[in-house]
Image (cartoon, rainbow over all chains, first blue to last red; front, top):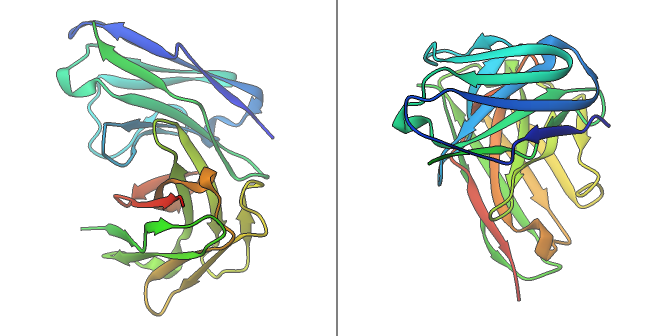
Amino acid sequence: EIVLTQSPGTLSLSPGERATLSCRASQSVGSSHLAWYQQKPGQAPRLLIYGASSRATGIPDRFSGSGSGTDFTLTISRLEPEDFAVYYCQQYGSSPPLTFGGGTKVEIK
Amino acid sequence: EVQLVESGGGLVQPGGSLRLSCAASAFTFSSYSMNWVRQAPGKGLEWVSHISSGSSTIYYADSVKGRFTISRDNAKNSLSLQMNSLRAEDTAVYYCGRFYNYYIDVWGKGTTVTVSS
């Protein structure tokens, strides 16, 4: 089973700053198999990035994903007030088919 | 609008059973695999179960294997999760999600399950 480790656990930043979130896999993950989600309090997760670097429909271009193999990154170029949330990475594998990282909370500094 | 709506959550005693449902609308439900994902209070996301479009392939997380059963009715655009022998650690918000390629592209708002005496 592939384990996803997200870091940092919490990121304290100000609006307008750049956020860099890391997702490290215990084994190599196919780039097409890595996704990122955003979750705000009391809401369901929302798909942000799929295939490691493709933005989902309606996602602003300040969100970008990169990486390959075992190291993946979600970058928010300039934080907007609505971006403060928890972010999860997810990988698709054979068994189990889906695993999630533990999440990174982006909070207002 | 593509939509998933979960129902069936509630308070149940340890050892009890509950059946969750997920109603799909505005897309061809029979063409998509579906998943259940849960989130315990204050915790992260945990994948629970997966069912292929025609029900031929089913997976469960080890934590629920033998206790939970996923099923679907493509004629009714409906997904279900039968949960038996419930434990306190099954307390969570349960989300159904549409599986597309290698990720969940549509999520329901969730239904809350509380296992407590």
